[in-house]
Image (cartoon, rainbow, N blue to C red; front, top):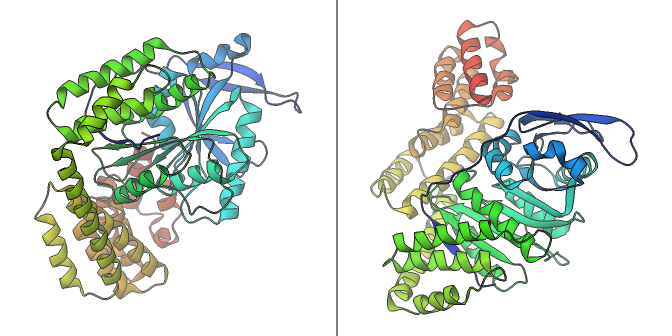
Length: 467
């Protein structure tokens, strides 16, 4: 398929909210005679795996699941892999979409960045065995999705493992390193924000996939490095539904197809006259709807627009900006350990001079990541002077990131300034820090266990984590 480079615009989406809570029982597998009581229509945060209780997951079963045993119906599944083992985050975020489109959602509570291949493989094996044995799932409609490092985990499952994966929704990062003998029998949808520091990576991957027998599409939306908004991810669900219809795994839903077609036809009216945005919408429509409806008129319009002088000129400018951005990333990576603090503060001030420029915003987000990695690494090694420098850079480039203030509190406690750490933890909490267990179990804060202020901050973070 032709590549699909797509900019998504704000649009209203009506989603059916989860139905009432239902309870039922179901045989958990052919080797077991025990029954399992489950809840449908409600997000469950922490379910232990039967095979190995050290692994767990968040779960959403659509409300129709309660009657599925009577109807002899099995459900498609989306497995989510977060970069920070926040299994409940995507499950809760996309539960309304699962309810609307009839998907089971499963989010690993164990998968995270920094794990060995063996650790990751074990998590995936246990999770797939658990879900395929315990729930009524359609083995031909298993989808994997991940955010950041979790996106690479998801893609790796489809590329290299034996599980029958039909599709991948990769968010904010691309593929792991590819070796010989990889699988190509899956559909791949990439989603990335136009301010994400991995934006260039996913554009390059999209071009690479044009030369490979993997059906693929790239969606770009207005956002940063994060799980996509619900209205953006809705098109991820639809992409997988349309693929199932093409493969005759699902009856063709004319209403759903027409709804998608009508919404994007309306979007074409909205962006009329903007060649770049028109091209984005036409590419999406061809990628989503081929073999479901006649797409020749969309394809013909796409071919004409991509040959216009306006579009060719835009492509040339885009290539120039990509080269500049890549060079700047390399410059920052080389300078982070060598340039002094005053140089960095001026460099960041220069980035702030272009507040609306996507390239500048992506470079800020890239530098946020680099400074975080160096700050956390030097803290781990108790290199306090260096950690202070990197935290200052981190705060300058990303002042609203709660991680800045959490790490600053760690630094203060380790350097004998524990009395100042509570103020930093309060700022972290106020800015949205929600890793309750991480803070509660941190040895750095053992001295605060009977401190009323610390306990109040912990409660604030706990409440935030449960929202």
